[in-house]
Image 1 (cartoon, helix red, strand yellow):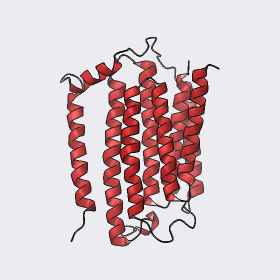
Image 2 (cartoon, one colour):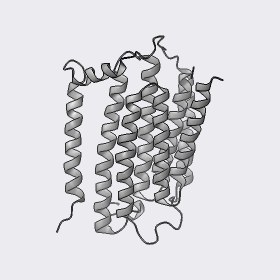
Image 3 (spheres, rainbow over the protein chains, first blue to last red):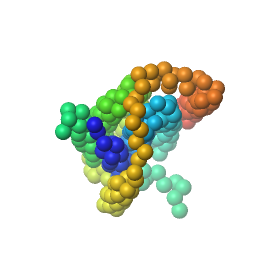
Image 4 (tube, each protein chain N blue to C red):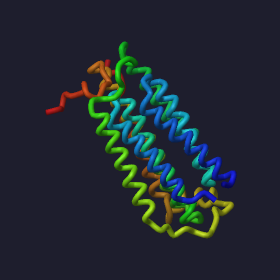
Amino acid sequence: MIPLSWYLTLAAAVFCVGLYGVLARKNAVAILMGIELMLNAVNINLVAFWHYLTPTLASGQMFAIIVFTVAAAEAAVGLALIISIYRRRNTVVAEEIDLMKW
Amino acid sequence: MTSLQIIFLATAAATLISSLMVVTARNLVHAALWLIVSLFTVAVLFVLLEAGFLAAVQVVLYIGAIAILIIFAIMLTRRVMQDTGPQTNRQWWLSALIAAALLAALIFTLSQVQYPLSTAGVPDDSLRTLGRALVDPNQYMLPFEVASVLLLVALIGSIVVAGDRK
Protein backbone atom coordinates (compact mmCIF):
# COMPACT_ATOMS: atom_id res chain seq x y z
CA MET A 1 0.00 0.00 0.00
CA ILE A 2 1.47 3.35 -1.01
CA PRO A 3 1.10 5.94 1.78
CA LEU A 4 -0.69 9.17 0.89
CA SER A 5 2.29 11.24 2.04
CA TRP A 6 4.44 9.83 -0.77
CA TYR A 7 2.08 11.20 -3.41
CA LEU A 8 1.83 14.56 -1.67
CA THR A 9 5.60 14.86 -1.36
CA LEU A 10 6.04 14.03 -5.04
CA ALA A 11 3.41 16.61 -6.00
CA ALA A 12 5.11 19.24 -3.81
CA ALA A 13 8.48 18.47 -5.41
CA VAL A 14 7.12 18.73 -8.98
CA PHE A 15 5.36 21.98 -8.00
CA CYS A 16 8.58 23.49 -6.71
CA VAL A 17 10.50 22.38 -9.82
CA GLY A 18 7.84 24.10 -11.95
CA LEU A 19 8.07 27.20 -9.76
CA TYR A 20 11.82 27.33 -10.33
CA GLY A 21 11.19 26.99 -14.06
CA VAL A 22 8.75 29.92 -14.03
CA LEU A 23 10.99 32.22 -12.01
CA ALA A 24 14.40 31.46 -13.49
CA ARG A 25 13.93 30.94 -17.22
CA LYS A 26 14.32 33.63 -19.86
CA ASN A 27 12.20 32.28 -22.68
CA ALA A 28 8.47 32.91 -22.37
CA VAL A 29 7.55 29.48 -23.75
CA ALA A 30 9.84 27.87 -21.13
CA ILE A 31 7.96 29.82 -18.46
CA LEU A 32 4.71 28.36 -19.79
CA MET A 33 6.18 24.87 -19.56
CA GLY A 34 6.93 25.50 -15.89
CA ILE A 35 3.31 26.58 -15.38
CA GLU A 36 2.13 23.31 -16.95
CA LEU A 37 4.35 21.37 -14.53
CA MET A 38 2.76 23.21 -11.60
CA LEU A 39 -0.74 22.41 -12.84
CA ASN A 40 0.20 18.75 -13.22
CA ALA A 41 1.45 18.68 -9.64
CA VAL A 42 -1.90 20.07 -8.47
CA ASN A 43 -3.68 17.36 -10.43
CA ILE A 44 -1.58 14.63 -8.79
CA ASN A 45 -2.55 16.08 -5.43
CA LEU A 46 -6.26 16.20 -6.27
CA VAL A 47 -6.43 12.64 -7.58
CA ALA A 48 -4.37 11.33 -4.63
CA PHE A 49 -6.75 12.98 -2.17
CA TRP A 50 -9.71 11.59 -4.07
CA HIS A 51 -8.28 8.08 -3.98
CA TYR A 52 -7.41 8.08 -0.29
CA LEU A 53 -10.10 10.24 1.28
CA THR A 54 -13.33 10.06 -0.74
CA PRO A 55 -13.08 7.33 -3.38
CA THR A 56 -16.83 6.83 -3.61
CA LEU A 57 -17.58 10.41 -4.67
CA ALA A 58 -17.02 11.91 -8.10
CA SER A 59 -15.99 15.33 -6.85
CA GLY A 60 -12.24 14.60 -6.73
CA GLN A 61 -12.05 13.51 -10.35
CA MET A 62 -14.41 16.34 -11.32
CA PHE A 63 -12.08 18.90 -9.79
CA ALA A 64 -9.17 17.38 -11.70
CA ILE A 65 -11.13 17.53 -14.97
CA ILE A 66 -11.89 21.23 -14.41
CA VAL A 67 -8.18 21.86 -13.76
CA PHE A 68 -7.37 20.04 -17.04
CA THR A 69 -9.83 22.26 -18.90
CA VAL A 70 -8.55 25.49 -17.39
CA ALA A 71 -4.92 24.48 -18.08
CA ALA A 72 -5.72 23.77 -21.73
CA ALA A 73 -7.53 27.09 -22.17
CA GLU A 74 -4.74 29.01 -20.44
CA ALA A 75 -2.01 27.31 -22.47
CA ALA A 76 -3.82 28.16 -25.71
CA VAL A 77 -4.34 31.82 -24.86
CA GLY A 78 -0.82 32.19 -23.40
CA LEU A 79 0.83 30.76 -26.49
CA ALA A 80 -1.32 32.94 -28.75
CA LEU A 81 -0.14 35.96 -26.78
CA ILE A 82 3.50 34.85 -27.10
CA ILE A 83 3.15 34.39 -30.86
CA SER A 84 1.56 37.82 -31.19
CA ILE A 85 4.34 39.41 -29.15
CA TYR A 86 6.93 37.66 -31.30
CA ARG A 87 5.32 39.09 -34.43
CA ARG A 88 5.59 42.64 -33.17
CA ARG A 89 8.77 42.72 -31.10
CA ASN A 90 10.63 39.80 -32.72
CA THR A 91 11.65 38.47 -29.32
CA VAL A 92 10.31 35.99 -26.77
CA VAL A 93 12.89 36.67 -24.09
CA ALA A 94 10.88 37.83 -21.10
CA GLU A 95 13.41 40.48 -20.12
CA GLU A 96 13.18 42.21 -23.48
CA ILE A 97 9.39 42.55 -23.39
CA ASP A 98 9.52 45.66 -21.22
CA LEU A 99 7.24 48.19 -22.88
CA MET A 100 5.09 48.56 -19.75
CA LYS A 101 7.96 48.47 -17.30
CA TRP A 102 8.62 51.51 -15.16
CA MET B 1 8.56 -3.12 -0.14
CA THR B 2 5.68 -4.31 -2.26
CA SER B 3 5.82 -4.33 -6.04
CA LEU B 4 3.33 -1.45 -6.17
CA GLN B 5 5.67 0.66 -4.06
CA ILE B 6 8.60 -0.18 -6.32
CA ILE B 7 6.57 0.86 -9.35
CA PHE B 8 5.59 4.09 -7.61
CA LEU B 9 9.20 4.88 -6.68
CA ALA B 10 10.39 4.26 -10.24
CA THR B 11 7.61 6.45 -11.68
CA ALA B 12 8.24 9.19 -9.12
CA ALA B 13 11.96 9.19 -9.93
CA ALA B 14 11.15 9.43 -13.64
CA THR B 15 8.74 12.32 -13.01
CA LEU B 16 11.25 14.27 -10.94
CA ILE B 17 14.15 13.69 -13.30
CA SER B 18 12.15 14.67 -16.39
CA SER B 19 10.74 17.77 -14.63
CA LEU B 20 14.26 18.85 -13.69
CA MET B 21 15.36 18.32 -17.29
CA VAL B 22 12.43 20.46 -18.48
CA VAL B 23 13.55 23.46 -16.44
CA THR B 24 17.27 23.08 -17.05
CA ALA B 25 17.52 22.05 -20.70
CA ARG B 26 19.34 24.51 -22.93
CA ASN B 27 17.62 23.51 -26.14
CA LEU B 28 13.97 24.52 -25.94
CA VAL B 29 12.75 21.65 -28.13
CA HIS B 30 14.54 19.21 -25.79
CA ALA B 31 12.74 20.84 -22.89
CA ALA B 32 9.41 20.31 -24.65
CA LEU B 33 10.22 16.64 -25.24
CA TRP B 34 11.20 16.19 -21.60
CA LEU B 35 7.86 17.80 -20.73
CA ILE B 36 6.13 15.08 -22.76
CA VAL B 37 8.02 12.42 -20.76
CA SER B 38 7.02 14.13 -17.53
CA LEU B 39 3.35 14.29 -18.53
CA PHE B 40 3.43 10.61 -19.43
CA THR B 41 4.83 9.65 -16.02
CA VAL B 42 2.02 11.63 -14.42
CA ALA B 43 -0.44 9.56 -16.47
CA VAL B 44 1.23 6.42 -15.05
CA LEU B 45 0.68 7.87 -11.57
CA PHE B 46 -2.99 8.34 -12.36
CA VAL B 47 -3.20 4.67 -13.33
CA LEU B 48 -1.59 3.76 -9.99
CA LEU B 49 -4.29 5.84 -8.30
CA GLU B 50 -6.98 3.82 -10.10
CA ALA B 51 -8.18 6.87 -12.08
CA GLY B 52 -7.98 5.31 -15.52
CA PHE B 53 -10.18 7.88 -17.24
CA LEU B 54 -7.96 10.71 -16.00
CA ALA B 55 -4.87 8.88 -17.22
CA ALA B 56 -6.38 8.62 -20.70
CA VAL B 57 -7.46 12.28 -20.60
CA GLN B 58 -3.94 13.25 -19.50
CA VAL B 59 -2.33 11.46 -22.44
CA VAL B 60 -4.81 12.65 -25.05
CA LEU B 61 -5.25 16.21 -23.80
CA TYR B 62 -1.95 17.21 -22.21
CA ILE B 63 0.45 15.30 -24.45
CA GLY B 64 -1.69 15.20 -27.57
CA ALA B 65 -2.84 18.81 -27.50
CA ILE B 66 -1.01 21.08 -25.06
CA ALA B 67 2.51 19.71 -25.57
CA ILE B 68 2.02 19.75 -29.35
CA LEU B 69 0.78 23.35 -29.06
CA ILE B 70 3.92 24.24 -27.10
CA ILE B 71 6.13 22.68 -29.76
CA PHE B 72 4.26 24.64 -32.45
CA ALA B 73 4.81 27.86 -30.50
CA ILE B 74 8.51 27.06 -30.15
CA MET B 75 8.72 26.51 -33.91
CA LEU B 76 6.91 29.77 -34.67
CA THR B 77 9.02 31.90 -32.32
CA ARG B 78 12.55 30.80 -33.12
CA ARG B 79 15.34 33.27 -33.25
CA VAL B 80 18.69 32.55 -34.80
CA MET B 81 20.86 32.71 -31.70
CA GLN B 82 18.31 31.38 -29.29
CA ASP B 83 19.76 28.02 -28.31
CA THR B 84 23.15 29.35 -27.25
CA GLY B 85 23.94 31.25 -24.13
CA PRO B 86 22.44 30.81 -20.69
CA GLN B 87 18.76 30.02 -20.50
CA THR B 88 18.32 31.42 -17.01
CA ASN B 89 18.03 35.03 -16.01
CA ARG B 90 20.12 36.85 -13.44
CA GLN B 91 18.08 35.89 -10.39
CA TRP B 92 18.16 32.12 -10.91
CA TRP B 93 19.87 31.46 -7.58
CA LEU B 94 17.12 33.37 -5.75
CA SER B 95 14.47 31.34 -7.60
CA ALA B 96 16.19 28.09 -6.60
CA LEU B 97 16.30 29.30 -3.00
CA ILE B 98 12.60 30.21 -3.02
CA ALA B 99 11.63 26.88 -4.59
CA ALA B 100 13.70 24.92 -2.06
CA ALA B 101 12.24 26.91 0.84
CA LEU B 102 8.70 26.32 -0.43
CA LEU B 103 9.43 22.60 -0.80
CA ALA B 104 10.71 22.41 2.79
CA ALA B 105 7.68 24.31 4.08
CA LEU B 106 5.24 22.10 2.12
CA ILE B 107 6.83 18.85 3.30
CA PHE B 108 6.88 20.07 6.88
CA THR B 109 3.21 21.11 6.72
CA LEU B 110 2.15 17.85 5.05
CA SER B 111 3.80 15.80 7.77
CA GLN B 112 1.86 17.58 10.50
CA VAL B 113 -1.64 16.80 9.24
CA GLN B 114 -3.58 13.66 10.12
CA TYR B 115 -5.64 12.75 7.09
CA PRO B 116 -9.07 11.10 7.54
CA LEU B 117 -8.23 8.15 5.35
CA SER B 118 -11.18 6.27 3.98
CA THR B 119 -11.34 2.52 4.40
CA ALA B 120 -13.45 2.02 1.30
CA GLY B 121 -11.65 1.29 -1.92
CA VAL B 122 -12.36 2.79 -5.30
CA PRO B 123 -15.70 1.30 -6.43
CA ASP B 124 -15.91 -0.62 -9.66
CA ASP B 125 -18.31 1.82 -11.30
CA SER B 126 -16.40 5.02 -10.47
CA LEU B 127 -16.37 5.96 -14.15
CA ARG B 128 -20.14 5.61 -14.36
CA THR B 129 -20.50 7.74 -11.22
CA LEU B 130 -18.28 10.37 -12.80
CA GLY B 131 -20.23 10.30 -16.03
CA ARG B 132 -23.54 10.65 -14.22
CA ALA B 133 -22.15 13.47 -12.08
CA LEU B 134 -21.11 15.43 -15.16
CA VAL B 135 -24.67 15.65 -16.52
CA ASP B 136 -26.72 15.58 -13.33
CA PRO B 137 -28.34 18.99 -12.73
CA ASN B 138 -27.93 18.51 -9.01
CA GLN B 139 -24.26 17.77 -9.26
CA TYR B 140 -21.78 19.09 -11.81
CA MET B 141 -23.75 19.98 -14.91
CA LEU B 142 -23.22 23.71 -14.38
CA PRO B 143 -19.40 23.52 -14.06
CA PHE B 144 -19.39 21.28 -17.12
CA GLU B 145 -21.25 23.85 -19.21
CA VAL B 146 -19.17 26.72 -17.83
CA ALA B 147 -16.00 24.81 -18.78
CA SER B 148 -17.36 24.45 -22.31
CA VAL B 149 -18.00 28.19 -22.53
CA LEU B 150 -14.50 28.82 -21.17
CA LEU B 151 -13.01 26.66 -23.90
CA LEU B 152 -15.06 28.49 -26.54
CA VAL B 153 -13.89 31.86 -25.22
CA ALA B 154 -10.25 30.67 -25.18
CA LEU B 155 -10.63 29.40 -28.73
CA ILE B 156 -12.03 32.67 -30.06
CA GLY B 157 -9.53 34.70 -28.05
CA SER B 158 -6.53 32.74 -29.32
CA ILE B 159 -7.64 33.12 -32.93
CA VAL B 160 -8.16 36.86 -32.51
CA VAL B 161 -4.88 37.43 -30.66
CA ALA B 162 -2.62 35.30 -32.83
CA GLY B 163 -4.33 35.93 -36.12
CA ASP B 164 -2.64 37.77 -38.97
CA ARG B 165 -3.74 41.37 -39.31
CA LYS B 166 -3.31 41.71 -43.05
